Image (cartoon, rainbow, N blue to C red):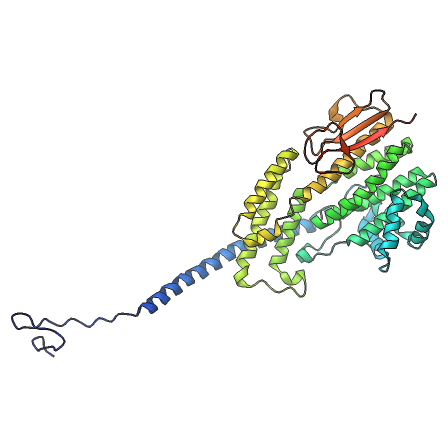
Amino acid sequence: MSDTEKDPRQEAREDGTYPTPKACRRHLPLWIILVSSFGGILLLLVVGLAIGTHRQWSRMQERLQARLKEKETRSLERPPLYGEPVDGSAWDSYQRALDGIPKDLKPDDFDSKLDRFVEGDLSLREEVRSLVAPLAGIPLLLRQGARCREGIRRRNWEKGMAMEIPGLLGSQRVNAIALALAVEHKIENRPQEAIQAVVDALQFSRDLANDGSLIEAMISVALQGAAQDLLVRWLKEDSLPANCLSTLSQALQRTDEQHPTFLTLMRSESLMFDATCIDPSRAGADMPSIPFVSSYLFASAANRFHEFAEAFAPIEKLPWIEQQRASRDLEERVLSHWNPILGIMVPGLIGADRALYERLAQLRLLRAAVALRLSWSFPAAPACLPDDPFGMDSIRHSFSADGSSCKIWSFGTDGIDDGGTGSWKPNKAGDIVLELHRAP
């Protein structure tokens, strides 16, 4: 059709001519435009997620490899709580002791009676003897391990959350057998052997937590508490000779020096989570691989948790009350993060430091009590006394007016000095107190 020909689809101008027809325009449907735009945005998001995941994953992998290498090359040695070290690994003996506990022991019979005997129910002596007699080799294995130069357990950190750790029940039974033997030595008027058995139990609990995980540290805290409660009873009775007190003083000081810190435990938790994310198959045969969609979540959570753990380095140097305030602020910031995995991992971890500090405070009260029993006096300079984990300086003490008794106390978890009002058992309020009376 020529330019002058009539196009029936067009209307004529006033002069009778028709406008020149324009090229036909093709319009895409709106739904195609929307789908194409959405697809482009989605592609950009996927590419961005892939790049972000790669970066987060690389950070986590590099950190994991460095930490695993550090663990593999570190020394496993530690000074024994008393005596000179001998060559060998303590865990060769400890593991044999743990394996030697029968699986068919009844808790209501075995565990209950041993605990009551150690706590002072001597009417159970004959029953406990019969229960422990078949297991007489366990305290010997504990003693062999306690003397060894290498006391840090070689752990398979690469397994992450599935890393093998000694069981709570078996560890408690090994500890209870050693303490029951200590009580038996004490009854038979063998105080040096009694102290050595208690120190062996302390060494076992300390080696259990040394460079370990948070769960191992909590097991260690429970075992250490049983041994310390027994020592408190003996110190109150004033029934230990000077040579035993000297041995105990050295052992308690070294126990204090090897006490785990919350920072090292958080770093261990971070390492375990990294290893679990990198290769879930090593963390358990039935554990599936992490899908790509979730990879960014896990990698981001692991890196954020690592930052959370490292943030305790300066916090641990603060006084207790300031520590708690800073820890709560840190926890709130971490939990406000968009990643939901952090909300599963973090809650409950902050409170674990309280148990560590409570046990440490009791340990330092015991150190002061041993020094008091040796001379029934304290140095004039407060700096000579151990520091109070819950206070601003050394633990406090006060003699009665006639000098026949002395209270030693820590501020406790509320961080308030109540003047020695409280109990040996830690509570949310009140001091942690140990009171001794001088023999007439």
